[in-house]
Image (tube, rainbow, N blue to C red; front, top):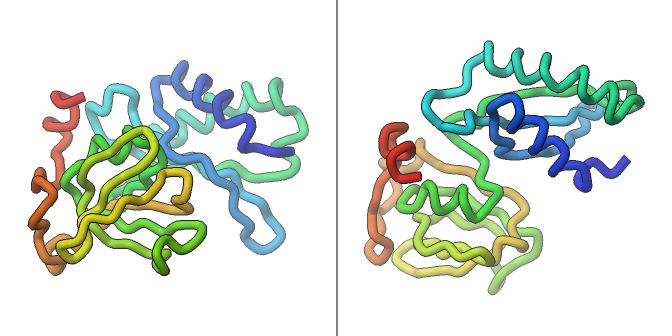
Length: 178
């Protein structure tokens, strides 16, 4: 089963439970296939806890048994918070964390480079601008294989010179800004 085409089904079901789907991925671990769901509260008012992950899992399993009866035979489900090294999968994710440092890996090289570490600048529906070592680099969103915030690297990475430095946003700032 091609799970990627069912991502919107999972997004709708999670919204009914009060959560946003941040990232939807499958991974192989030995012989097992795992469906990983990174979730956040729709209102972003508080961090996702272990209790939230259990509630999401318990809320999804009955729905999945009806919507995709053979799915749970083929894979395991893992629900997680986005964590501090939060995945960035949509333009809105990059917008929300403008001014923050992130790591991006592209599917194919862009001007000979596949890995970027830069400060998030302007974001359009098609691309994100990163400031890396004082140089602005435009990365098309459809070229991104993986992107995550890099908060642990912020103290040792030179501060941006071009991108307005908003700095990491707090939960209060995120809520009021959205």
